[in-house]
Each structure stands twice: as structure tokens, then as C-alpha cells.
Length: 335
Ligand code: NAD
Ligand code: UD1
Image (cartoon, rainbow, N blue to C red; front, side):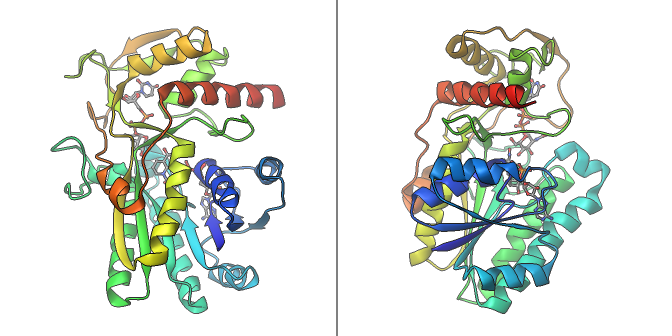
């Protein structure tokens, strides 16, 4: 298939581009480079051993999207493009609704114009809000706690309405848990701009001496060791999930929300310990107060992904830690 990846030069998009290419799909990356670099395209080409099309543009530009869908004879779209910083979304909510919700409307309009009605959408476990039951199943009530999460839920609901209005639409909303790690080559990975918010990029920056220590937010949660527990998923497993979703949509119409997680939670201290052991390095840390908005624990029930997509996560925490540091070392060398 010819697949358009909006946000294709970003962290998850670039890994998915690799997997889809290796699966035999022809990928076209569409990105405004607001949170990624064009050099990612050459790195993807280096890994897959062939060229990969790139269009620089904004998903809010419906005309450019329409022309791109036509030029590259696109059959399906994987929609990653969007803003994703939770804290920033509370400071600038309208930027989040404009970029994420309006950007998705623009994409849908372009797809309708071209008669393309297959989409895999990057959603997030953040749509569930504070868990009432664990593991989180797709039927769990949705109640996102911030504008970022609400923008994701609005898009999911919009896509659901669309699929109900027209039987030709085929949509999978993938609810990612906590993606970490990088491709084995260490050539592509997560490169946050400014101070990272998420745990793994902070650990790798501490490990290479870019930061003196990690702050562990809270050690009095009702979890095994008192620190927060999350379902960390290797980004290559996540990427595989997109290939599986596209296969599923060949045979299935309608709207589907599906968790992508491992089904296992790890505490912050467990992640630090695994990282130190597999990489043979130190990660100095100190305990700090709980971070506002954090929940003690969440992890997925990945059963629906197993059943519908025939997908399950294959890689463990050790692989996540090794590949994350390998990529961080490459970033260090390049800068
Ligand atoms: P990322 O920032 O690395 O990638 C997003 C890409 O979209 C970037 O390359 C950025 O330049 C591009 N982009 C942003 N706005 C755009 C626009 N208006 N037009 C065109 N391109 C635009 O983020 P990521 O981690 O790869 O996340 C991809 C998607 O997955 C996002 O929608 C995010 O909300 C979602 N998600 C991410 C996580 C996570 O932890 N990384 C978790 C759950 C969901
Ligand atoms: C955050 C987002 C969530 C998003 C997810 C993507 C919030 C409230 N939620 O989730 O919407 O989908 O990222 O991966 O921001 N931690 C520390 N020290 C740090 C950083 C983090 O101890 O410096 C802890 C956190 O308290 C948490 C765990 O590490 O227990 C994971 O944090 P993080 O990587 O930020 O992810 P989430 O909070 O799960």
C-alpha cells in the first residue's frame, strides 16, 4: 500500500516508517518539522536501503494535503502529527485544539476529497484519565485530565461519528501507553526539544552527564516500592502495532479503539535499576515531591490488540534501556 505518515519524521512516526517499509509498503512522510528534523529522512533511508518520500507541510494546509494524497496515490493514512506536551497544553490550550483537532479535520477533508477512507490515528492512554480499574480496558470510561488528552478524545469521537456516518470509513485509534527506546541501529530515537518531561529521556541525559541527577517524583504511592508505575512499551513494538492495524483495516470497516501496551507495569525505581544494570552506568537520583497530575499506577489490558490485530509486545525493559542509551550517545556525538 501507499501510506502517508503525517508527523512522519517524529519519534513514533520515524520508527513506524521503518516497519511499514520493511513490510513492503511505500511510505510518504508529511511533517512541518516543528518537533523533528529533516535529517531523519536520510537516516530512515540509510536503514531501509531505499529512498523515502518527504513533503514539508502543515496538516492544517488542506490544499497541500489533498495534492500530496493525489501525487503519491495514497491508499491509507497514519496520523501522528500533533502537539503532545501535557503541561504546555494547559498553558496554551487553543494551540492544542487548533493543531490537533483542526489539523485532523483538515486531514479528513483532504482524504474525503480524494476518496481515501482508511486511517490509523495516534491516540493515547491519557484519554482514560485516572484509572478506576486496572488493567485498563478499552471500555474503561474516558475522562482526560488536561487539554492535550481532551484534544485526543475529541479526535477519537470525531472519527467515530465519521465512521458511523459513512460505512466506507475504516479507522483504528491506537491508545499508546508509554513509548520508550529506539531502533537497534541507534540512528533514530526520541529527541525532545528543551527540557524533556518524560522519564526515559531524562534518565538517558543523566546517564551521559548532561544532567546531574534525576528527580523521582514521589516515593509514597501505594505501589510496591512507593514510586509511580507505568506500562513502558518499546517504540519498535508500537511501530509493529501500526503495521498490524493497517492489515486489520484491509478486512474491517468501522471505528475501533485499541490499546497498545505490554500489560505489565514497572516502577520508576525498577526502570532506573534496569537501565543501570544493562548499560553498566550510574543514574544518580533523589526523591522529590509527587508531580501534580500524576496517577500512582496504570497499565494496559492489551487483549483486544491480541485478538483483533494479532499483535503483542515482544521486547522487554532491558531492550528499551539499551536502545534508548545507544540513541542518546549518537545524539551526543552529533552535537
Ligand atoms: P513527535 O513530536 O516526535 O512527532 C510528532 C510530529 O508531528 C513531529 O515531527 C512534528 O514536527 C509533527 N507535527 C506537529 N504538528 C504538525 C502539524 N500541524 N503539521 C505537520 N506536522 C506536525 O511526537 P511522537 O512522540 O512521535 O508522537 C506522535 C503522536 O503520538 C502524537 O500525536 C502524540 O500525541 C501521540 N502520542 C505520543 C506518546 C508519546 O509518549 N510519545 C504517547 C501517546 C500518544
Ligand atoms: C506522560 C503524560 C501522558 C503521556 C505520556 C507519554 C502527564 C501527566 N502525562 O505520562 O499524557 O501520554 O507521558 O509517554 O504528563 N517521573 C519521575 N521523574 C521525572 C519524570 C517522570 O519520577 O523526572 C515519573 C513520573 O512521576 C511517572 C513516570 O516517571 O511515574 C513516567 O512519567 P512520564 O514519562 O512523564 O509519563 P506519564 O506521566 O505516564
